[in-house]
Length: 196
Picture (cartoon, rainbow, N blue to C red):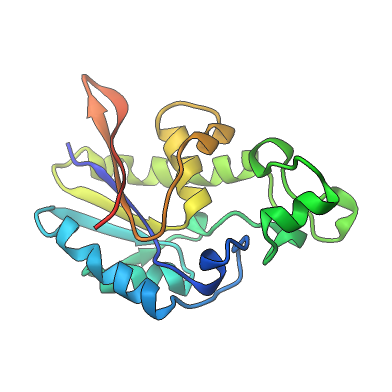
């Protein structure tokens, strides 16, 4: 059985400055491109049978620079829709909502005009991704998913049978490789946040 390879995209200007970057389609920085290319050796010994990326260009470009060929995009791998908190840092949000935590408190209150997406909705999206790739993992090849920090953290929680909000437990840095697999038939985390 193959493993699930999770690759977070390389650095963007907004990830560098710790701004919530959901649906805004911004490019990698020069450092992000260097980071993405540095992932290539981590994948060299892998038999990758399928590559699936978020449709956002920071993920697609990371896959390309990491040497992953023939990617298909899946809109369900798009990052969490942060609504009115798009482009804002946690520190800025906490000035108005002291102690706010995305995983516990969710996104912008409903009267904001653009409330964004709940963690439960992100969980539903990644459940769909996992269902679609399950048949591929029964083969011997690995499946690479190239996407974003929060959506991959939720996906990891769901792979492990945890509620979506348990993604808070899995810090994920830019341009890192994490692997999910099975042991004795049970889903397990086989490596996490491995930097080149």
